[in-house]
Length: 72
Image (cartoon, rainbow, N blue to C red; front, top):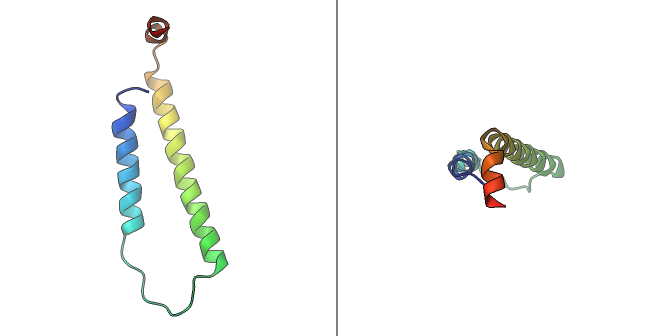
């Protein structure tokens, strides 16, 4: 992994952390519905897939075959 990958990953995780913290939801007496939980799970999965794709794209942009040959 390149040295550029770690700061990019850190920034993505930081943004996701602030997104999750957000404003606290209003107090409710009932439990969240399963549909809401499914929506949250899908949203988190989407964020994770997006972050993985961005990291992979960054890695592919910075990949240098000459450096890989030297490491072998």
